[in-house]
Length: 253
Image (cartoon, rainbow, N blue to C red; front, side):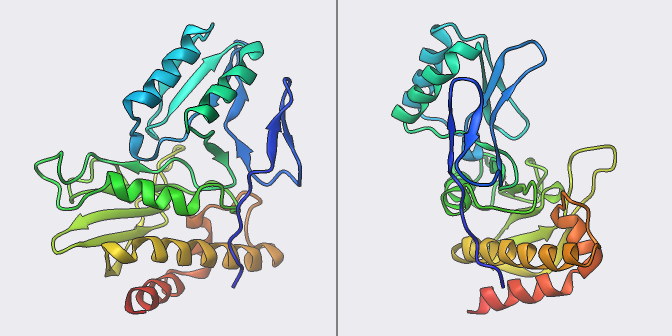
């Protein structure tokens, strides 16, 4: 099975993002139609501290245009091109990172979870950060989205993510694979017949990412997948059984 690796070999040269290696992920610094530049800020679960909000405010005060929060719960900073370098420096100094757009795991989406929401069965925000710490910058065939809901109310649309986690009683999560929220044909993921304990969530996700990489490479070599292959493409060709087995093995390990 393929080993997961990370990419962070890029820099901003004042004009564009420059890659030290082959371009294997599109980092979130993108020119907009009106000439402004968008900087996507990594914010797992949509959580920012007061200090981090102050960093964003400082960037906006220095000639920024606006901040837009997306459905993936991350802030997009809209700044003039000549302010991108300074904005990136301030983000780094404030302990913030640029988010991925393609070719890796996108910002982790999570509902408020247990401790905040009265309906939640499981804590979500700490888990979102834990997952993000493990997978940030991981090289993948294309976009990969993870969503966490603290209960079956499913406020974070977990079933429409590549991996969806839904909180259940007694410290476990229902897991669904192969969902899709974008485009004209949204798709619910397939709910697996195995519950994942909280302490196994990150190992299970890492195992699933590796399997996705492995199967995508095999299917692409045979000409059976499009260039930009999401998890639902792989499941449609390879079936769900290998993924169920992988989750069961990791849970029982």
